[in-house]
Image (cartoon, rainbow, N blue to C red; front, top):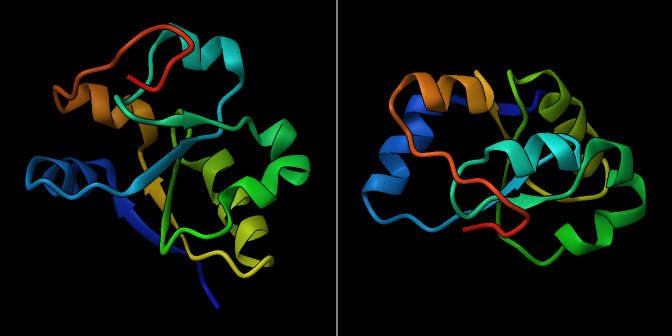
Length: 109
């Protein structure tokens, strides 16, 4: 089964409408700290194997990286563990290009 994918623009529309989905940023910690989508939780792709259990129990996980490649790999992996995941095509770069806010630091918001 193919991984579901939406563009960053669709994620922005959903968030603007009040949808509150779990968003996981799989970029490395230094990338996340430099600027991430508000509310995104950082679980780097390099740690996803060890931290996959943290992602269980949510209806759907939205997964983002810089452009969409690493997040696609993360989606494929977590789906193999029974977690529904949606890749954000265009990633954080597209989010920023669309005028979406980026926050800095180690915290999700």
